[in-house]
Every structure is written in structure tokens, then in C-alpha cells.
Length: 194
Image 1: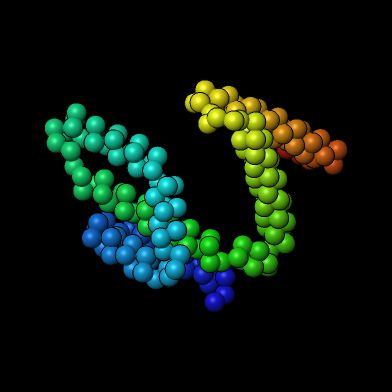
Image 2: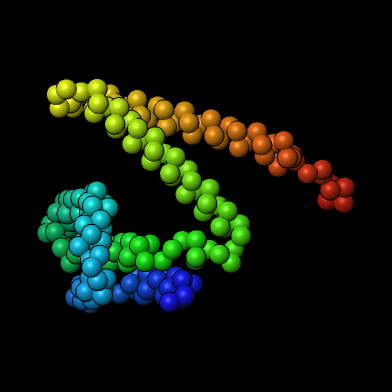
């Protein structure tokens, strides 16, 4: 199927899902998407749940605390509605990304293709850098690392990634400045006279 048709179908599905207010209907749609996704269904569900774990805990506990303190009794129906809606949206998004090749979707938009290519290359660079960090960390350890060692290692990774990002941003800003992107236009004489 045409990637653009799939994109518009996905965007339409997101709008339709946001307009639904029945947990039973959302659960039915999630079950239908789960069945229709084929062999990838368990991997997609696992990735969706993993992506939503922090959101679900934060929003769920906050809503339950709010309901309990201000309303006297927790209202689980709203929480169930939100969790099912977001889970269905994330599941469909992951399914869409897995099924539709990004470059085929953007082939008619040259500037978007360029931006996607740059983004994907940066992602590949950072993945490689993180994999190198991980290999270096495990190769220098005879015993399993303690939590403090992991925290120190994560901090070192963060510093290197931040330095790399700042250097890339400085290079990009310098390239844009040399091309006159940041030059202010001359004030319009007709507009200044008013």
C-alpha cells in the first residue's frame, strides 16, 4: 500500500481515537489492532508498555491521589480511559513506524528527505557512541558494577553526549551565520516613517 495513504489513515485514526470516550470501545480497538498487527504483536505490545510505563505511573498515581484527596473516592474510569487511549495511540504509532519505510514516505519532499537523512545519521552516530561506551564499561569490569559505578558511568556518558551536541550546534550556528541567516534585515523606510 502507498505510504502516504497509510500516513493519512494513521493520522485519521489518531484523531478518531482522541474523540472516543468509551473504555470498552478503546479496548476493542486495541484488541483489533493487536490481532491485525500479525507476528509483531508481542514485540509491539512490549515496546508500547515499556514506552508508557513512566507516563502511566505518573499520571495514574497523580490522578488517584487527586481523586482521593479532593473527591473522596478514586475514579478509575477516567484513568482507564486515558491509559487505553494512549496505549492504543502508541501501539498504532509503533506499528506504523515498523511497517512504513520513512524514506519512501518522504520521497516527494526533498527537504524533508534531507532532514530525515541527517536525523537518521545522527541517531546512528549516537547509537554507535553509546554502544562503544557500554562495551568499554563492561570490558573494564571483572565483577558486576555497583549502582554508584553505573551512575558515574551514566554521568560520563551524559557529559560526552552534551559536549558533542554543543559542538555540533556551534558548528551549525557558525555555518548559518557565515551564510547570513542571522543578519537582521534593513529597516523598511516606508514602515519607519509611520
